[in-house]
Image (cartoon, rainbow, N blue to C red; front, side, top):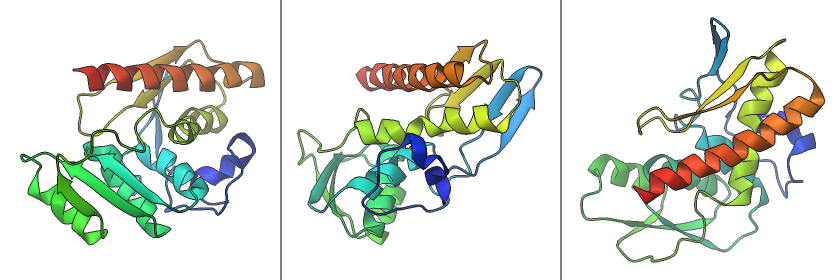
Length: 193
C-alpha cells in the first residue's frame, strides 16, 4: 500500500486510498535519539499524513478552512486530488505566495469570511494520520529510546518526546496514543498564542 496506508491495519477503513507519497521520510539517529524528518513529504510537513487519511475518508461536500499555513496547504492539496470543493478564509496580511499555491489548487479564497472551519487540527481523521509518524519510527528501528515528532516546518521547532520506548507491541500502542495526545496538546497550545 502507498504512503501512510502501509499501516492500514491501524487506520480507519478508507472509502478510497489517497496517497501522494507521504510518509516515506528519513529517519536519523543522533546518539540515542531517533529523528524522523517530515520535510520530505509532498507539502513539507507531517500534516500530509493526516491529510491523506482525511482525503481517503471524506465523502463529498464542501470543506471550509481558516488559513493555518502548513495545515491549509496540505489539506488543500489532498482534497483537490479527490475533487472536494474547498474554501479558505485568509487574513489581509496573507503571504501572496500562499495565495498562488491555493489558486493553483482551485481553492476558493475569501477574506475573513469563515468563523468556524469544518476541519481543524483536532479532526480525529487527521490525528489518525499523524500517529503513523510514531508507528513508522518504531517499526523502522530495533530499539527506540526516544521518538521526536517535528510539529511544523514553519513554526519554531516544537517536539514531543516519548521516552524509554521499546519495540514491544504494548509499548508501541501506548507510544502511538501518547504521541497523538501530546501533539494535539501542543497544537492547541500553539493555536492559543
